[in-house]
Amino acid sequence: MARFTLQKTASAEDIDILGHVNNAVWVAWIQDIAVAHWAAMAPEAYRDAYIWVVTRHEIDYRGNVSVGETVTGETWVDEPPRGARFNRNVRFVGSDGKVRVEARTTWAIIDRASGRIARVPGELVEIFLERGAEG
Image (tube, rainbow, N blue to C red):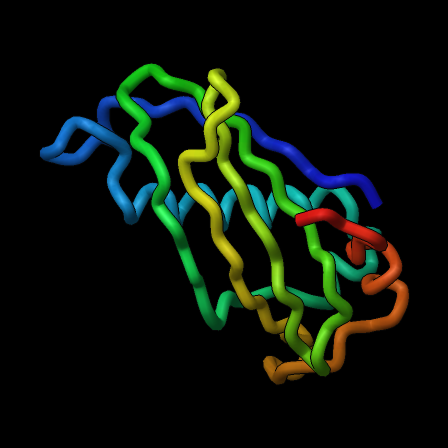
């Protein structure tokens, strides 16, 4: 599975009092890329049967982004799941090639019908797990 990318451009609403993208916006962008990756790669039957919820974010802020600036987000999964949980890596890079934000997030899979956490199905592991990722 290749890494998944998504571009984001900072709007005036994304900017905080310091003149750069607010931390809460970065969290939303991390969720946006994870959800887009799921929607793009998971078979419809799995999208209908399961939903993911975040259980943990670890975020390193390495640079600022100003209004009108575009970053490219990249996400990948480089470890097998632990039961119901997958760790996801996310990186946002500016047009200059410099990393602005890096994150490692943990997501749990929920069975929509029961509302309970479930073991990650093997087929999903094969779709999303990146073998030999450099990270």
